Length: 603
Image (cartoon, rainbow, N blue to C red; front, side, top):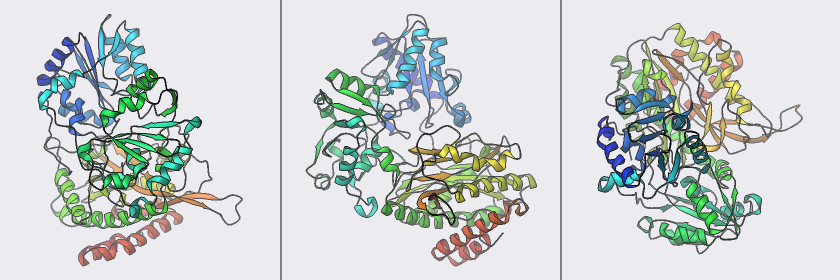
């Protein structure tokens, strides 16, 4: 799947679809219905058949919700999507509300009529989130009611796209680095609380555990499936038969029982009397209710695959290095284009996105983008996670900045990189703010830290240069990244928010401090880096972990104010650029190589 800009939704969706949803609500005797963004697998990116929020409202962001009542409706988004939601949604029909500040519970408490029956689909809500929603409705004197079939699905009817049936294929050991039997054995033995089994619903965990990949979810090579992993390493995998390729059964082996999703309810019933791990953050309330009804003892614990999946093995790490070297050449060709043609005839955002994708396509190895490319010219760059559309598309101008955040999916790794480029001559303020962001990026790249350190403990390193000038940014500094899986992967992260998961060797995280001046420009510098094994520090008393930077592409030297860099920072930046030139230089054409030599010259 590739980037598209002709939106499949528009402002008229609400006026066309909400009446149909209300008719379905009436047939169920409901006064309202909750429409989350999440699907049955709690995916960030959704197959078209499961993007109920987009069909109901027109909003296509990766986080949000809606509440549709008899006589009013509201859409909820976070700060990333304040511009996009007003571009896509009929604000005369939907009230726009903040997803974080109060969110859906606060709206229910204030807007739900006393005595109202508000429906929800238990397959689409986590048990904890559902508990908050029920409590809020109760405070309003209303009641949440599980309903099946889903009124949105009923209203959508025959026009709803079919569920995806992309082939599920083996992910070879040359990329995975460990066979599925070994993974299943060690994860099964480590189940929380000595549990007998675990129910897995996260597509990324299923893909990792069984060494398989699919294509059901845009931007991630994921198969939609469920699994039950037993303590002895045997498993049951529930997969639509239409996805099963001829060599898949043999790949899975005789310890994995391949079944259909229709077999899942009976499989859960057969867990009667067993202790079963289920992750309340990854699995919907439906699973908890089904297991409890069957007489199983539910153990609420984190997905047992999450931490092992996050700690990449040596084969996956080398694959990441290879993917970033290849991707770095594509990004470098794009940066050369911006530095030459793009300076003479500044591109619009969509042209920049398509051009960058063309360079990645030319590698011959691109499987997909890892997310929809963010390209923000001038003031649009100050909108974190802005995504250009035909209606919002802006042309870069002389004296402005262009922020491009992009990534790719390759068989050997997933990439995510942000570069901010000057179009024309930047101002001194732009250089100052860019250099402060760069200083934070460099600090987080060179830090040494002891085992047990969390991402929240080192987040301030990336912010300290900005803080010294009274500046900051309002997003996290780093997220986990998968190995030819999701570009956003837990449980590790680097942010102000407290996090109990320590950073461990093999974890891949982003390093992306930024600065955003509303209405003017945005700056972000993002590299991916992998946590290295503990090493002895000369004269030290305990081994220290660190980071190896994976991303390889030049940083715009025209935006650097050298006087703000220390000698250590200059040496670190020069060493990074020398490495970029060494790895990327031999891959690119002579004219790009000549430009790269200048772009990577010592500061």
